[in-house]
Amino acid sequence: MNDFETSDRGFKYFMPTMTDYGHNIRIYESSAAMEPCLWMAAERAQEDCRGGLKPEAVHIHMTLEQAREIHGKLGNAIASHYQLGS
Image (cartoon, rainbow, N blue to C red; front, side, top):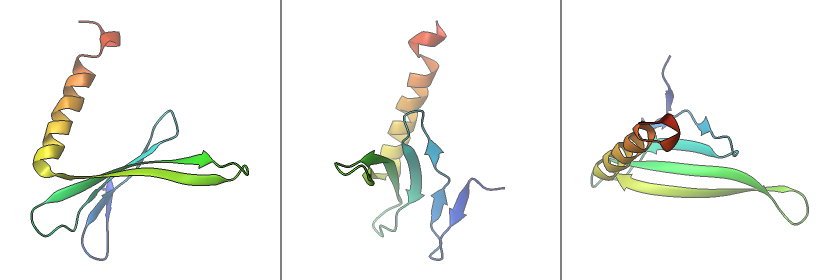
């Protein structure tokens, strides 16, 4: 089983990851024609002033080089986390 779905246009949409704080993290391929790019989205429903829920989201567009840089930094942060000890 894949961890992504493919859109009717052929782009991969990876299955979201839910965080402990209720954020949905999604990664998907960009349709940018200049070079291969990705989108990363962090979404969370926030309560509005009437008690209803409204979605809040941040969408980050990045090149594959930028995605690799973030990947490396995230890997280093995981490997060297202070709660894991040295």
